[in-house]
Amino acid sequence: MKKNIEKLLIANRGVSAVRIIHTCRDRKIQATTVFSSADRLAHHVFSAESAVHIGEPPPAESYLNMENIIAAAKKSDVDAIHPGWGFLAENHVFAQMVKDEGFIWVGPSPEVIESMGNKVKAKKIAKDANVPTVPGLDHVTSPEDVKKWIKDEKIAFPILLKAAAGGGGKGMVKVEDEDSIDAAFAQVRSEGKKSFGNDEVMAEKYIKRGKHIEVQIIADEYCNIYHLFERECTIQRRNQKLIEEAPSSALDERLRVELFETAIRLMRKINYTSAGTVEFLFDLETKKFYFLEVNTRLQVEHGITELITGLDIVGLMLDVAVGKKLPFKQPDIKANRSAMEVRLNAEDPKTFNPSFGSITRCQLPQGPNMRVVPGVYEGADIPPYYDSLLMLLMTAGPDRTDAIKVMDHVLGRNIRIEGIKTIAPLLLSIIRHPLFISGDFSTSFIEENLEDLISTFKDASNEDEVLKIARYLSEISAQGPQAWM
Image: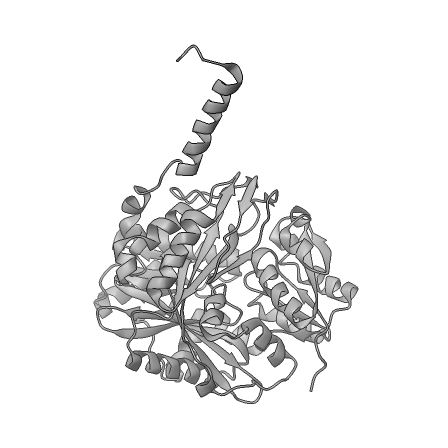
């Protein structure tokens, strides 16, 4: 058995790093974080026992700089490295470098990361494992390939063009008509090259009424592979998830069992270890599901699975990384609650433009059935270099209705962020929408209902109005009757 982890370096920032620190505290593991010059006063820096500067603000010079992160690990004399999510979390070269330098890598093997990192290769492996995949064209070398495929297969618009090495919603364009194919192909190819170093493109049929459903997997080195139930991540904007929930209200028990068996079959085929997620697209019209990708890392939304099962997924990753056997069997894992998560981003809720600056007020929600993973604090600066995620807000209840009620309380009365804009008004508008409450929505919900959602925003809250009145009264009290009276 490998040695225990007494000191862990977290090769990430913000919410991702803070979440991992929470488990380190529970396990009495010393946490070391890394930071760029822009993050020297960031929340994750103060939350850890120690922190190491790794470069200037641009990610390529800091959080994507493998050599600097390895140097930080050596300097800190850590036992292991956890990559969190984003940045280098699914970089097989970095995973191999970590292992070659003698550190414990908290995640799946570099070989598995590489095999699942390319969507074309992953799709082929899924087909070989008898996992249903979205009809498409795996190797697109020119716009003419796409046009020929559409004609030969009688594919109806819209379609999706995707970067083969893409992930996290990046490098993906919906194409509405034939005239848009050339520009979309150029855009996807450019984004793939810029973001992932790979300009390979693939095309897929677009599922108009689809739900995004994923299965959380945990596996050890002893061929034990278990599912931790499913999550639904259908509420998205431009393929970026905003709201997640567990379980999904779209599945019946037959479909749920089939989905779990399919996910485990695929993960067993690739000899998966650690935590990972198999993502599917569920067609509401045909009631069929299709493989999308395998996320070979900790997912942002893993927290709601922890809420419904009572398991610590980060803790399980640490156990697997040191060669421990999972302490349960599939029948032991129960899901007896519903949970919901919203991603609170620093963006204008109407335009989605990033919002930068200093947080002048930060009131976090408190109460039963709530969980917050903050990446900021009152007085913190929001730099323009990184993801706009400020914090994760989670709620739970005996059923979906109760989880929504608690989330309504969190967003409507319990949280207050000032100094920058956040998408809190949009999130509140979504969870109050009749279609969301009924569960009758697809991945195109936001684009189809955006005007309706924005129309419910209030420019000022009742509390703001009360403060204005109080100021007027204080003026009159201090200065006497005013001319305008």
